[in-house]
Length: 401
Image (cartoon, rainbow, N blue to C red; front, side, top):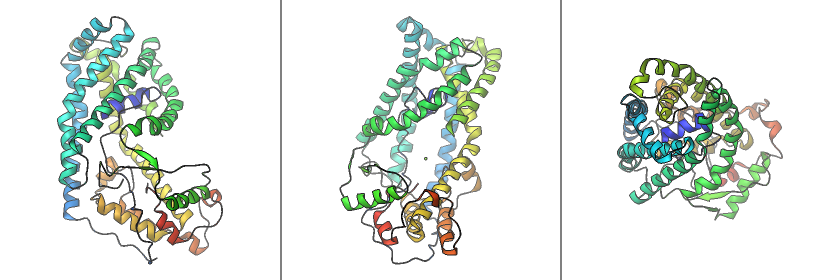
């Protein structure tokens, strides 16, 4: 369902809550009983272990296979004529346009789920256990996969008709209208998902350590976040690993898909069995085109995300001034996630949504403008005085992003 989720985010982010991505290592979750550091010096970047390098190299291979499958599966649906036959069967069941679209989507999603299941089982379950990164039982993994499928089916059945209606009513401007509508509903999904979708997969509850909760809230208050709450989620049942612009991406991707679709129909309409993007059978070629242009745009979008994450690190260091604790936490992140602190440039370009851990530790070691009396970039946003370093580390900051 991950490729379907990416497609719906791009063409109908305002209307569809995508199924949960396959379990991934979290950015960082610091054990709440970690001792406060006595040191304040530089934190060395540990070299990657042989096991971590093996995980890194094999992960690159699997990523390449996954990207290839993202292209091959919709190609097979389209150029074998299977998508048109599937739409024909959906029309016999659904009869009118709306229910034909819904039935087609359900058929398509179920078939994709079955096709992807062996691959997902290996990459998400077997491999994670082989490297000691998961505590998840097979039953939990499979139930989460089914829940993700169900969420995707329900959301798709409820809202997929909107972009397809725009395709039908405004074939020349559908990409623009869909992109405009995506913006407010994307923000809505950010609010809704943690409340209604995420709890389907993990147990959320109040923090058991009230002292820790108060320290986190005090730090949030200093950052100008008032009236917030802290929840504790039990992720240890899934993983032992420690674990943030779409409007423009949607617009550009949909426009390119719109411009490119004509080429497909001009040359392959007989083979495909349909000649309009508004046809329910056009779901696979739309998925193919969005996958292709999203992949080509990856270096730009990932660079933007890495910039945001770097600025988040800067914000955290300025508000806490506890460089050593942050550096230590990143070392723990690297160790527990089998991370490679200095990945190859191509990895960073095409895969990294965060700066490499080695660079983040280097930044923690080097960035201390307050010691030189230099202005802070985010000081205008802070209230009060910085807490003591020992208080900060014992607060553990929940997750390092």
